[in-house]
Length: 174
Image (cartoon, rainbow, N blue to C red):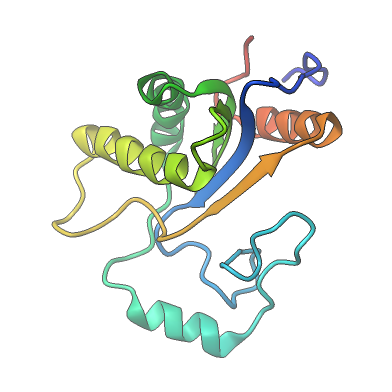
């Protein structure tokens, strides 16, 4: 896997967003694995603190088993997300799909918030995955929320780009 990636520059006509969302039931709030919620979703904000009662409560509300992406599903997601960005009119930079979460960097016109894009990416990617791998009636690929961070400086952009590119299932190519 490459270790040096091309230097990324901010587009002055768009906002770059770092969008992250998890698979259903794999990172429950209060668990030992990092997660974010509405109070823990800003840059430099700590993750949700571990609290077994909160994790147990979330697990008890689950209607389906936790969903982890297979290697084949991760590769599919990494191939599909650039197409989804094109469909939405967003400039794709890089994405990665792990067994329990997806990262995306894309540039969006300033009057559209990253949360709207995250919701559409989750919907469209979930639909594409379901065409290949059918879920039980009412089940979801994704956790309810996710993270949207607007990027306003190039050091953060370049750090996020290389972090995501290194996690890819498919080797990153420009």
